[in-house]
Amino acid sequence: MKQRISAVIGIVLVAALNLLPCVPALAQNPPAATTSPETTAQAAAPAAAAATGTWVAAPAWLNPGNNAWQLAAATFVALQSIPGLMILYAGLVKRKWAINSAFMVMYAFASVLVVWVLWAYNMSFGPKWFPFLGQPGPATSAGFELSQATIPEAASGMPDLTFPMATMTYFQFVFAAITVIILGGSVLGRMSFKAWVLFCPLWMTFIYTIGCFSIWGGGWLAQAGAVDFSGGYVIHLAAGVSGFVAAWVVGPRLQADRDHFPPNNLLIALAGAGILWLGWNGFNGGDPYFANADAAGAVLNTNICTAVALLTWTTLDSMVYGKPSIVGAINGMIAGLVGITPAAGYVNGWGAIIIGLCAGIIPWLSMNKLQKTAFMSKVDDTLGVLSTHGVAGLMGGLLTGVLADPAMLVYLGTGSNAPGASTTGWAYGNFKQFGLQLEAAVFIIVVNAIGTYVLLKILSFFVSLRMDDATLQVGDTAAHGEEAYSPH
Image 1 (cartoon, rainbow, N blue to C red):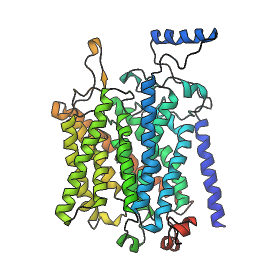
Image 2 (cartoon, rainbow, N blue to C red; image 1 turned 180 degrees about the horizontal axis):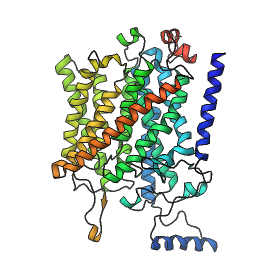
Image 3 (cartoon, rainbow, N blue to C red; image 1 turned 120 degrees about the horizontal axis):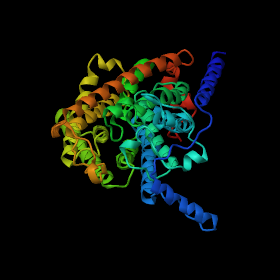
Image 4 (cartoon, rainbow, N blue to C red; image 1 turned 120 degrees about the vertical axis):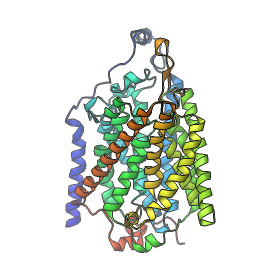
């Protein structure tokens, strides 16, 4: 009877979420145009030609190269989740949790997409509703999907975008999805799948959108001047903090699993790690929104930083533990990728090397020393997400405020506006940027810590957050009726 009541309540919650976009507006209009009169005139010409029987493939504002790059970059980021993190998690956990861990990734990816197009995209990138949140509404009409992309509250800080809203919506979705998937790495091996089913869309709606709009959607932090090139704060700091809080509220794995939790397939884990690394070319390379020189610089810096961090982490493992660790190398790789993410297009190659060294040292100390202290070890963060994502993202965001090179132009200027759009860090004479980065970090930490705690506590009234001990003993077979490897 209790299970039926929980199921009914769950259905009601999901139905309520589906009504959310109806509050401000049921009708979705195309975003306000940001084109110049000249561009409007150019767009009108193909329309006139079409009336006489001549056709064009696209409106004048659409640049095929930029559109192709954004779609490719989005696909690279999607591959980081499906199959990248899916098989990375499945390989790193104990054998009995391989299916559950992979399925949590797949479900999160699918559920976030539905929420994203129904209301969360516009809460993150749409017209301002509050200084920290956009107005909810669907991103599904033909007029919306095929119109020229724009971020209404941030449009004045960038050139007119040259791809459609459909491309923008999908590109930003894959970032949203990977955030909750990264968060899930903290609670592998014990969180109830029923709780996960409800948690993903609710967390995306009420927590992710706040940080995203505040920094990327033109909200109050963006207006103040805080920057985050590709998600060191919006994604990784948010996921690290929320994941750690979730691990605390949900509770630990069985003590036997905490004491002995060997990876069941390191080769599979390495394959997932490789997809993650190469997929990051789209993660950081796509964020100028143009296939320009800064996108190329961001891709190169991403790989420089990651290589340095991996080598540094492996060196520390060898010095302290006597042997280089494959799992340690993966953690170093991730810390490097995360560390450069907020800075990729703002720092030069030397800055990338410095961040890589810091990413190999500071998150290593956090994972191998801080998280093993008596106090911190009370929270069972399964994959150490706090260190590899939270600490690395915080570190990268603050170092952006130090190392951002004004010569790294994201967009070129013309005339009196030359040389263009860039960010200047403390090392180049602008201490204020460091202060802004610190302010943004505090906001993200507070919102995610409090929001995740409250959300899980509310959910706990309707569904058990943690699987029962009998299921925890057995694993995948008890939770899903399936197992990763056939015994025959």
